[in-house]
Length: 135
Image 1 (cartoon, rainbow, N blue to C red):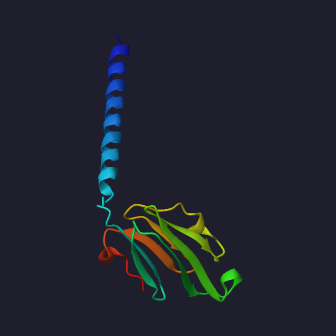
Image 2 (cartoon, rainbow, N blue to C red; image 1 turned 90 degrees about the vertical axis):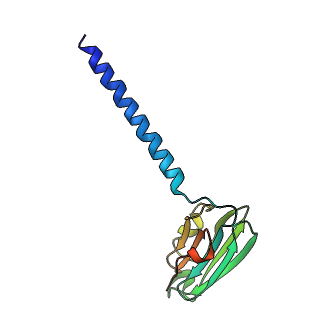
Image 3 (spheres, rainbow, N blue to C red; image 1 turned 90 degrees about the horizontal axis):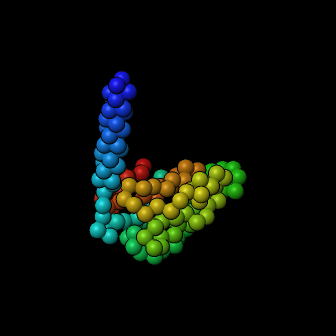
């Protein structure tokens, strides 16, 4: 008989944990802003480069920044950005760490790709006014 209250407590604990997991899942899904296809890709650098494109556009461009003073990008930094199929990706960069190139493509409002050596930020926003202002 002593085993019965213990089993009931285990079932209650499992139900509470499943309920908490469902609440967490619902909250994380609702926290991501949903767009109606009007999302904007904003690419900018500390030294004034600024470009905004619709997420559903097709574009490839190179962002040039001042060099870091050493290594492959001593004189000039270069990042090639590609927007295609509703996703944004950095396809090449001449910085030393390649974090921006190795980053998975982004496709949702609120996601970012950052190249710290070159001071470049790419973010997806609901509208151009929502972009983080650098500098």
